[in-house]
Image (cartoon, rainbow, N blue to C red; front, top):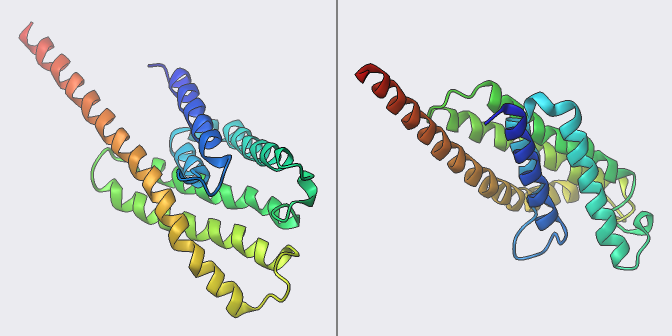
Length: 196
């Protein structure tokens, strides 16, 4: 498969995954947005200039559609404040984690440690930016305190990490299967060439 075709397919799949899961953050199928950006950074590193903004615009469009469908003005929703725009660097932290894994990818099990570390750091930074900005900047928290912020950060970090790791783990499994199948096909061609 040509790289542009492969990237287009991956971008489309990531967009579908985000649309399917972001429409209701509390649905039985959890929001995959953080994982979408991490996976996007891994697969779409050469398209970062436009793929990241496209997925970011999609996230905002989904939020806009969901909020206005509830009969609320987008700008009046409690989640939309100056803090909302911190989602751009927060999601880019996820994208950067995927970029880091891609740069260190060796098609070996040793990459799993790199991926796990990058995912942990990316989620921690993403949570810091998204939750921290909401806690300190939005009017939703009437009396912010450092202790309250820290408790809130820790309370939500593990659920976000678990959800993101689940989606990224599924993507890593698919990647490992595809890489194994590709290696098997290449080995078969090489054996066939030697027999001739």
